[in-house]
Image (cartoon, rainbow over all chains, first blue to last red; front, top):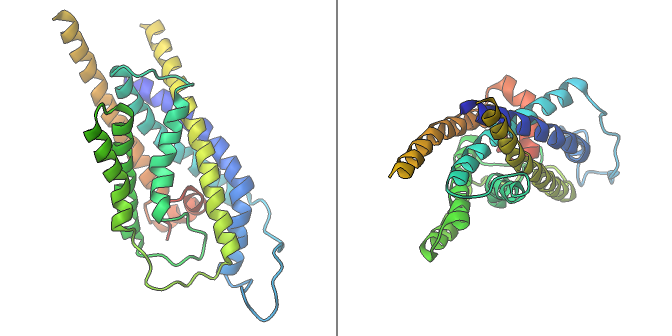
Amino acid sequence: MIARYITSALFAGALTGLVAGLLQLWFVQPVLLHAELYESGALTHFGAAPVSAHPELPGFDPVRDGLSLIFTMLTYTGYALMMVAVMSIAEERGAQIDGRSGLVWGIAGFVAFHLAPGFSLAPEVPGVAAADVTARQIWWFATAGAAVAALWLIGFGRNWTAYGVAVILLAAPHVIGAPEPDVLTGPVPTEIGALFAARAFGVGLAAWVVLGCLAGYFWQSEGAAERHAA
Amino acid sequence: MNVQTKTLTQSRARFIPAVFAVILGMTVISITGHVQAAALHDAAHDVRHATGFPCH
């Protein structure tokens, strides 16, 4: 039984990570490298002379970008393990799990793990001022966890009490507020910061949709393989 | 009665691996996304920023 979880999550997570990693390298990495020129002081916003919006960026770095690809694959494999676990419980309660219904699961995963925390703790362009990292991580996990519970209640709850609790769980972390820095010291132009956050969310949504579909698909195909072997 | 017992057993058979998979998944994203050890942080730096994890 456990093999079905591990195998389907590994397939779905590694494939998704590959897609997400390539999307990140193509669309997010140039923005990140651009921001790092300001973070390191190589470029200065509002300095003596106007700065070109199209500086020479470092190119492809096999070690750095290779590590990014590996860590993206690992991250989405971790998410895939959680997703197939929750899918299996939902299936047992009568939900249809396959590649097609996985689309909704992927969107839900994006909302829980990317959009909900990012709503108050926006994707951080390098150089941003931020509160203590431990405090932000605690808030991040609490917000993602509350969103998972809320989306389960919206998806599988059967009465208004469940929906009401879901709304409270979704709103509470943002009403309470994320840890914020005392002073703003970010040296990066706002245009780059905004583009970074938009790209991070966009690539995140694409990756999560792929993850949902693949997790649903491999959960079924591995189940069929298991039944065939038995 | 028989059906009910079967469903219950199946339910338990799924619950334990599901919990195990969630714990394993949480461990993996904690390591790739959250542990602040310098080597891990440097290797995962770009991913943490791009995936919206709190970095630094």
